[in-house]
Length: 267
Image (cartoon, rainbow, N blue to C red; front, side):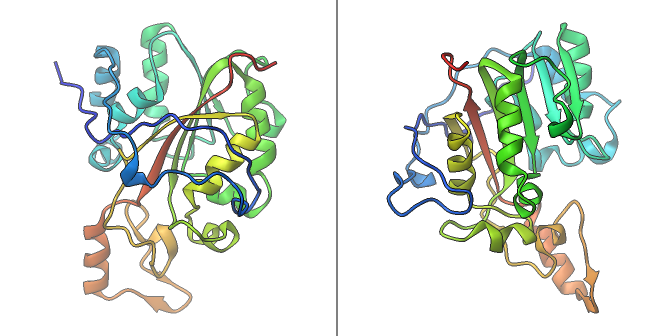
C-alpha cells in the first residue's frame, strides 16, 4: 500500500478577518507568513480507491506525468475527499485533469461528481447539498472580469453547512494588486483568502504541498510560459533555447492550496 505522504502539508486554523475585492485593507488582520504556519501533520486514513484512481492507466499519460508537480493524492486528501461525497468541480477544463481522477473515484465509492462550466447558470446540485466544491487554477481569470464575488456566493449557496471549498491557484508575491498580477495568471494568497472570507467562508487550513520556490513569477508570457503550456513565442518575442530550458527546469507554478469551510451554522 502506498504510504500517505503529506509532509509538505502545512495546515493552520486562522481567525476570520474582513476582505476587499482587490487587496486587503490596511487595518485587516495580518495573515501568518507561510514559514510560520504550523507544520502539524493531518491524520488521514489510507484511501485505496483514491490511490487506484490516481494510479489508473485510464488517465492520460500526459496527466500522470504531471503528478510529481501537482501531488493529486496528497492534495485531495488535504481537501478532505472521501468516499460517498457529492463533489462539484468548477470549470474542469478541456483536459479535465482533476476530473479524470474525481469522476472515476466518485463512481467507485458511491459518490457523485458534478462538472460545472457556468456557475451563475447553476451549480448542478440543489442548494445546500454539495460536500466539496473544487476550484483549480482559475481565480486569475475570474478576477479580471468581476466574477470572483458572484462565483464565491454561488459556491457558498451550493455547499451544505460544513461543506468544503477547495482551492488550488497560482500564487503571486504578497503586497501586489490583483489587477496587476491576474493578467499574468497569478493572484496574491491574502487577496483570495479575504475574498472567500467576505463570502462567508472560514479558512480552515492552508498547505505548501504545491509550493514551488523556483517560480519567481517573472516570465515573458506569464504563468503560461511554464509547464504544462510552455508558451515560447508571442507578439514577436521568442524564447531562446537556453531560456526555454531554464524555464522548463522551474517545473509548474508556485501554487497556494487552501481549504475553506462553510460554517455549520450557515443558513
